[in-house]
Image (cartoon, rainbow, N blue to C red; front, top):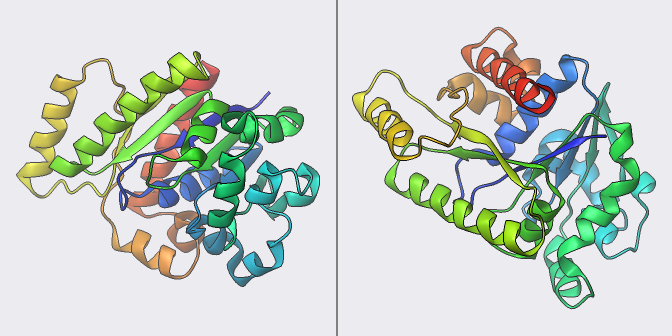
Length: 256
């Protein structure tokens, strides 16, 4: 049965999509069967993986799946060996209104994914930077939360908001939701401030696992601009090594 992991932070620009894509590729390269779910109306993950083919999925995407207008098997897209995608679409924002007005709205994604969980080892969900019905559905369906953050004042505020939301979800819809870890992103070792903020983070939240830091890297930016994972663009880069190390940490936590 797959471990379902939400990659989430209510602050935008912290690297959720980049983390989802590259962690997915790293796990797939380790031989794990991985499903990526794009539940962000901006559909950056979908566009990065399948490009303009996103337009072909107006009637079979995560939104139509949650409104029961499509079946799970027809919504899956094969990206590469061991890596599949349930895409987002331009129409996802409109679907939000439909979902809000449906019965058991918080569990729409959970129920949609249930039939295929035995087919995968990991399900990674890329979430929007807002607290809405999509994020609530994602956390309700998940076993773990992975929080990417920048080591800035506003980055830490976003993380605290996620902690509050996780407490609410545990009380209301998913008592088994666990924090997998924090992933400091766009990390620069050459300056003192990120190092000091990382030290403060460890001291302030001693019970929150802090996983591998992902470096700020030109290779990552170039890979994104070409719609590639870091492993496809430069598998020997510092960023690629960091994502591979992160994948190993995730496997160690989930599988023991």
